[in-house]
Image 1 (cartoon, helix red, strand yellow):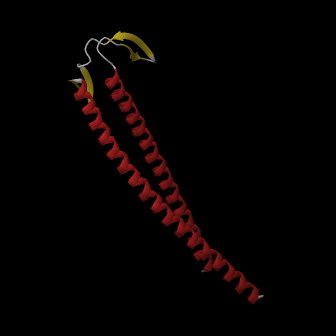
Image 2 (cartoon, one colour; image 1 turned 60 degrees about the vertical axis):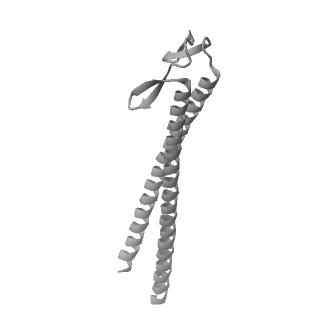
Image 3 (cartoon, rainbow, N blue to C red; image 1 turned 120 degrees about the horizontal axis):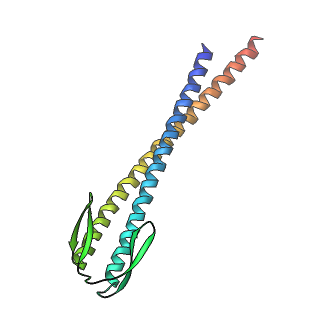
Length: 155
């Protein structure tokens, strides 16, 4: 009977360990998503800065893909194409483009906040599971000590 209890304790510890590992993987995925969104924010910052500093007639480097760039002259800074999402874009004035980018940045901020809240929840759940695992391990050790004591008395 006591062997079955010990085996159940080991099984419980193994299940808790698996749950903790799954939560750790979920946390890593959330943190990777946060990093990706922060990189997107950095790109938006750079775009806003460029729109604020570039003037009509300026020469700029334009990416054409594959890490290649062309020199181009800006013909009209008030004709800016801004991605709206879902592969849609619209032409905006410089000010309109900056506003669109700032709105996008605010949406990303909200996403990051939500993801950071999720990270905190995952960390709290993981801490609870770790505490349960410690309690289960202590109970197993107490049972083993009791069994050893009973075996020593029986001899």
